[in-house]
Image (cartoon, rainbow, N blue to C red; front, side, top):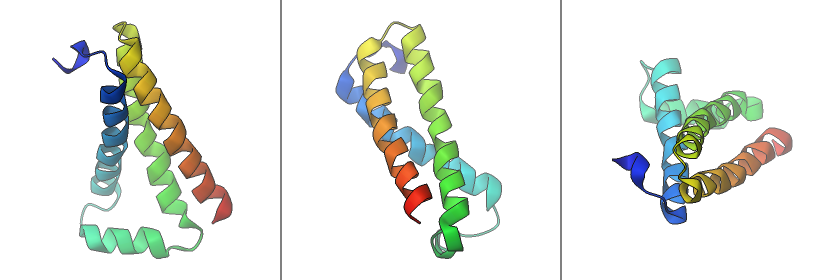
Length: 100
């Protein structure tokens, strides 16, 4: 099972993939009737990038869930990888929110 691995690189990969899944779920929930192209155009051309920053922030919830699962199962190396990528991703979101 996926929760039995304890590897830092595996945690980085999970930390990278789960926000992408979160963004896809956000797209389906918020912009279900629009195509991916139309959704991407809207969130990148919207003044202030409000919807983009909301979607990026909400996509981190999956990382928080995965991090909690791995910490509770004692898989600390994988949890460190998830946390490391979450910090990088969070810095990116902070830059998007403050600069633009």
